[in-house]
Length: 199
Ligand code: AP5
Image (cartoon, rainbow, N blue to C red):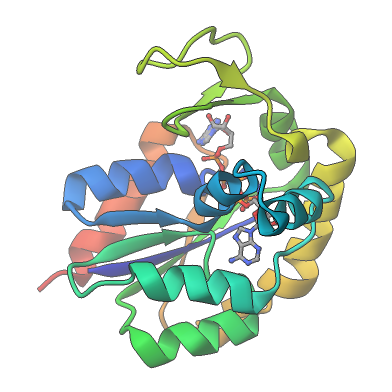
């Protein structure tokens, strides 16, 4: 099964992608995590990506598309954070058939609240809320540079202008999920939709 998750920053795409990947035994491909890994490398490209991400802007399509092309296989995947532009969606359509497009709908106010409290593991990228001290893998947690209020506002703006138009592109296959519910309830809705699509 090939699944795409679309939703504003903080809508729980990463949280749910981990659960979907475990339950359905498919690969979890997060462009955000892949880009953050490169940005830690200290290379010229890494430093350029870090600057763009810290400002809350999008990485150029050619860089992200190249990353995705290297990782897509025919064994099934859940894409978390890709596609994010119409150009990316068109490219994806050429290399893979998409079975489900899940739209995580969340008001901006709640997205800002969640992101300002988010902490992430430096090692395995698992996400937590403020107050958690260490990851289950034993590594330290940190606050992402783009989880500061100004960057969050910019990311929400970019989502509205660049990514939200994808909902129209995927209109016939897109299923809306109320992402303001608890993690468990959102996952129940996700599983309900995915089971109805499986033959
Ligand atoms: P990326 O890492 O993909 O960030 P994002 O899309 O902004 O999404 P987030 O990771 O912020 O949120 P999420 O929806 O995954 O929510 P999460 O589960 O963590 O991208 C970062 C940057 O990389 C971009 O800004 C861009 O620069 C670049 N980039 C990435 N992909 C790109 C692409 N395709 N093209 C160009 N550039 C690209 O949850 C958030 C918080 O809420 C957590 O603390 C979590 O514990 C909590 N939470 C989750 N669900 C719930 C719930 N149901 N109830 C209460 N709390 C919850």
